[in-house]
Image 1 (tube, rainbow, N blue to C red):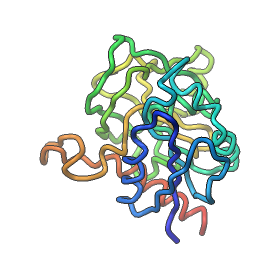
Image 2 (spheres, helix red, strand yellow; image 1 turned 90 degrees about the vertical axis):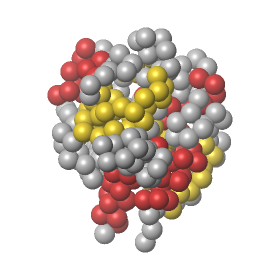
Image 3 (tube, helix red, strand yellow; image 1 turned 45 degrees about the horizontal axis):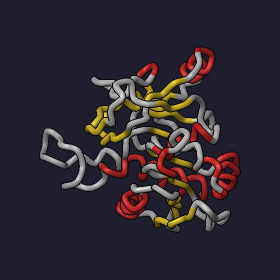
Image 4 (spheres, rainbow, N blue to C red; image 1 turned 60 degrees about the vertical axis):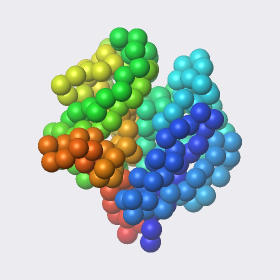
Length: 235
C-alpha cells in the first residue's frame, strides 16, 4: 500500500508544491489539503510547509495555528500520526503548542538564505529514522524569524529528554538557543525544523557537495523515514 502524505496549503504558503514533489520522488502519494477544511482525507502523515502564512502578521505561524484544519492536525498528532513542520510549519507547531518554545526574529535582523550544515541529534523519530545519530547533513535554509527561544526550565527539559532533533553546525544562522535547528515531541511523531528538506531531494537542484554542484539530496531521508514509519505502523 502506498503511503499517503497530506500537504496543507495556507494563505501565503509557497513551498507546498515543493513538499508534494519531494513526497512523490520518495515514492509516496502527496495529497493536497486546504487550511479551511476539517477533512484530512485519510492520509497517513502530514506536512505543514514553508512560506509566509497570513503574511507573517502578529507572529509567524500564529494565525495559521488557528486555522480550521489545525484542530484536525492536533487530534491526529495526539493519536500518533507523523507530522512535519518545515520553517513556517515549524512556527505553526510551536504556536499550536505541539512543540515547546517559540521562534523570533533572527538575531542579526536579516533574512538568511544558505545551505546549512545540521547534526542529527535524534534518529528515532518518524521523520529521522533513516539517519544515524550524530550524522551531519546539508539542508537549504531560508528564514527571517528562525531564532529558537525557550525559558530555562523548558530548555533544560528539551535537552534532558533528548527532544532536540537537529542542531546547527559551523554557523548558527539565526541566534537559536543551544544551536537548536529542529525539535521532536516526546512521542517522536511530531518534528519541526527551520531548514527545508524538500529542497534537497533531487540531483541537480540541491546543495553543492564535494561530488558535484547542486547534487545534495540529504532531504530525502526525511521522507524515506516517514514512509518506513508508516509502513511499519500498518504492518
